[in-house]
Image (cartoon, rainbow, N blue to C red; front, side, top):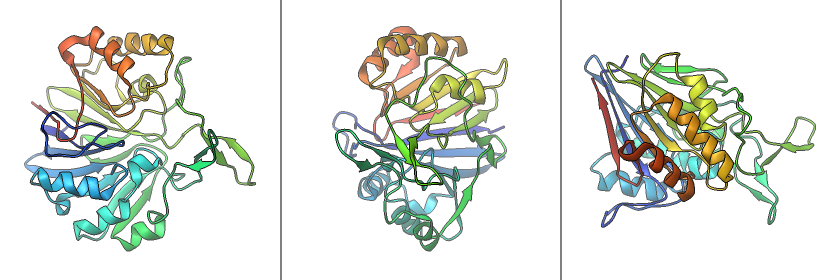
Amino acid sequence: MLDSLKVTVLVEDSAPYESPLLGQHGLSLLLEAEREGDVRRILVDVGQSPDTLLHNVGRLGRSPGEIDAVVLTHCHYDHTRGLARVLKATGKTEIPVIAHPSLFRPNFITVPFLRHVGVMQGDEPEDVLAAGGRLFPVVGPFQLLPGLVTTGEIPRVTDFEEVGIPLSTLDATGRVVQDSMTDDLAVVARVKDRGAVVVTGCSHAGIVNILKHAVRPGERVAGIIGGLHLVEASEERIAKTVTALSEFSPSLVAAGHCTGFRAQAAIYAAFGDRFATMGSGTAFVFRA
């Protein structure tokens, strides 16, 4: 297990009052995992603009060179755009980049018009390699260090959760098919005397599905941090989600990005001071 975990929001849809940081639609989080005196820094997603991310990193007094690895929670541009430039800014080589093997597939919407919303040109595999990244395309759970692991694919077991947006892709024969976002993954940290911290990107797999897959029976949940993609969800789905979240008794639910105000309000009503908003520069610390 980890001795401590610090999660810093580098990019999010909003920035706190009078903050010198920039807010922009998208998400990027820095995880600082400490174990036996060794600290590793994992970048989870990169937002949609390297200019915004690198600006915020600098204003926080941090350096891209601190990054030890990158995890991409899913393919969407507001989590992956500028990856190659961020990797290059680290000045390192062989930086592990962990993601699902289908990350670079076509992913698009057709309403109101055709638009690709997946990984953009300039961040494709050859660009990642040229910028110093080493791709780890993995379907199942993947350990970054003892106490910190990605979930891999999330089984869809609830009857009320869905991707949250009508997405399409192309199959091996070139036919247009519904994209169920099987690449959606989360990161799970286990901190001594605290329990599990679940970090999500957009929770296209459904946050309850994620928790059912990631949290062990009887395990305490110290935190849920990230986007829950309930921004366009029905009131019924929001209510069922809040009820299901309550069954895990999390000590913290920090829900931002694509969660949506209605869902945030419902979570706040249920959890009170255990709920937190997110914004660029916000930090959450878990330690024994």
